Length: 492
Image (cartoon, rainbow, N blue to C red):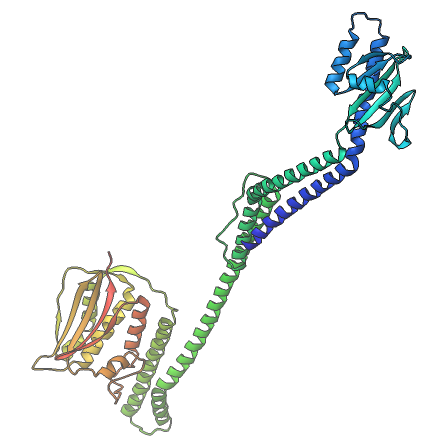
């Protein structure tokens, strides 16, 4: 804003300086030219009166009242007119004192000094004269008319220096008022120019800070400021588009880098996990394979047992690798979910049906209330995987407590969500292990029985699935057992 004020001040100073130069120039012209112009103007008036009076006396029109006309000329021009004959007899005088002084030769008719002559030609002499009696300066014409009469006309002239002084004072007063008025006008009019400039300056500053929200309002006038506003708007739009493209490219680049980092991390983690978990099965397969090659046992039943162990361990390795690959894809967002509306009750009934053999083998009492349909939104494959994992773990770890060996599956609806919980009687899980069981390959059973202990990946897959859905999951100790739960969004 300070710069805009400075611009207005510059405009005012420029205008004031221009006015001062004009006024000073006029004052100089007054001092140099006014005196000459004043004398020239009076000379022209006297010459005009001479020719007019000469024409009156040359005219043959008897209707012209010469004295009346002479009186009019005298009054109109403030002239003293004297006409006399060759014998010095007065014919007409507008001023008796002038007549008497001319006749008595007290007032000079011809100049005594050459520098007083203003005009002298064809018997007409115009000169400056001074009347010592009244102390006034005059310009006086002396000439002979065509009829022989002598014409004397004088006009008093005010002091030219006084006129110049008054004129200069008037110019100074006018100049002061003009500067004041022009200052007000400049202040008002300059706003029409400086306000758009201030707006353009503000927009330019915002553009420099990459703020492209402000645009210059284009008016109907076709001037340079409007054109500048259009150019700045175009520049703003272009820069905004280019910067947006750069940002988009940068985001894409960051995504690509992040994607590459994730892939590298996933690869490293996968290799680490596989190397760790496949040591035992590979060692078993290697040992039994060497036994077959070296014919450690020669009977067919032993060789069959060796082959079955190798096949069983190979199948476990295959399942483990597939689970690890699935877990990696879930954890690094590489798996797309096929979310649909489905009946949760039907899915749970199907999981229980598939697990019926294991439930009956362990003589487990399973509690499941088949309520009305509960419709949820999710991927049926992964939701079934979670329910199956929870139910399988419950079957593996169920124990008889107070004469009861029970698994209970329950659905609780609250706040547009349904909580699915699977409870089994048995030992509680320590607080320390409640957070660790969700880590891959972690098993509460330190002995890690390979026949029924599992791979330790199941709960990690549950964690990865629920993190993708951003829903709650976890485990709680109950008085006589353990409850595992997870939540799903209801289909509304």
